[in-house]
Image (cartoon, rainbow, N blue to C red; front, top):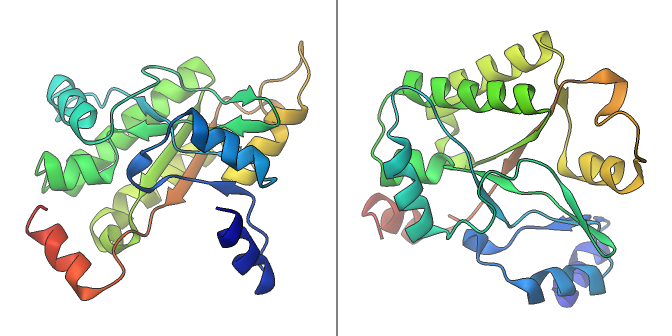
Length: 205
């Protein structure tokens, strides 16, 4: 991780946080994130319900097998020492599309809207992990989600801004800036780089 930060910095990039590949984290991961001076870690999978169209029990079972949910139902950031831990909403597109074989963009969109409604009801933070190679499939659902979030008073912000806000906020005080009902972050995960990566993904391996 130290070498990765060094390389990125040498190219004029300023990494602010980390997400473990396949969300395969442990306590040592967060210690390493803090040691190299990053602001946040977003590797902890957090279980969300998806509403009609998706079997939540099946989604939970597959999520446990694939990621291992360590933080069920925790939809808020937490401060761990010098870093902020930002849980990732599960099931993500990997689970819903590749594992549960959902082929309807409408079902995917409804699941994302159900998560948004939960975040608003709880004042939580919805962190969606979406893989860019599937963008053509979920672009309509994502556009609808962001439009609804803006209309209903959600704070749409990148992970770095949410982490900075959470690290500096004081109790009692507003949970989110400007009276926002909840926070929403769209985050990517590029784990298919070569043609063989895409081929293995299509074969379900």
